[in-house]
Length: 268
Ligand code: IPE
Ligand code: IPE
Ligand code: MG
Image 1 (spheres, rainbow, N blue to C red):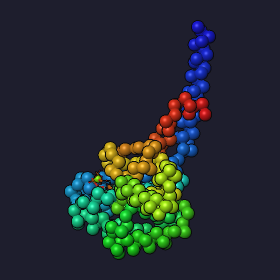
Image 2: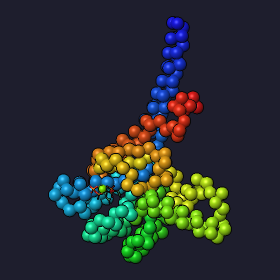
Image 3: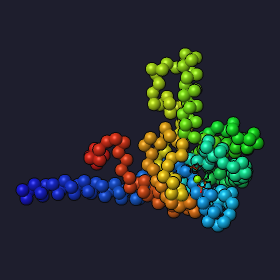
Image 4: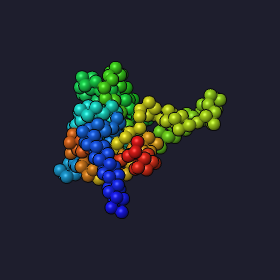
């Protein structure tokens, strides 16, 4: 009996040591997500705290975008996707939409030299055709100006929603089938991924949502099948690099099982 206890405790010790070494490895930042997606939420409530208009919150959110970018570069994250404006956000008051769009283009314009300096490539997800032509033009120009950069990929989801993305993919797949260029039996999960606007971008490993809301709000629905979710009460304009690092550390501590058992992971 004593022998058995002895044997068991050694087995536990080995598992424990393995877990500790995984933890140490992770806290030494070896487990850095390749792709982080952020739902930047809480600008309106932040402005309200100061008795100001919602647009004041959006303006102050720009600094948090810089913080997130810097933090991702420091940690070697390859893709940062920011949810900037959802399909549903078109239902907001007209004034707020215009001030958001103005802020978006003016920030992108001012940040182009910094993006180039830091080797940041801008790409967008979403239905740009819903934007005013001058807004669309300026965004396309920024995309063009940073197209040679090969450091961090900044993916801005703009006039985007997960359902819009999936609907568009289904339409395009159906069109290919109608032209007899694709057979229904050939459709795989990769086919669908390749028809989404995120084709070529790895699925996000970590999603951060600020402001304490616990929902996905029609973001990357297909792509987040196995994403680790991290919710923080911090309002977006208060979000600093250390908040990003805290999220990355929490990510590193998570055990991502992908349907397997914990034992399978420990033994491999
Ligand atoms: C996020 O902040 C910015 C956008 C959705 C564009 P909100 O504007 O949603 O701020 P809250 O959630 O009302 O505080
Ligand atoms: C989600 O925030 C969209 C963006 C951050 C762009 P919302 O503030 O629009 O989300 P809901 O409506 O509260 O879910
Ligand atoms: Mg909100």
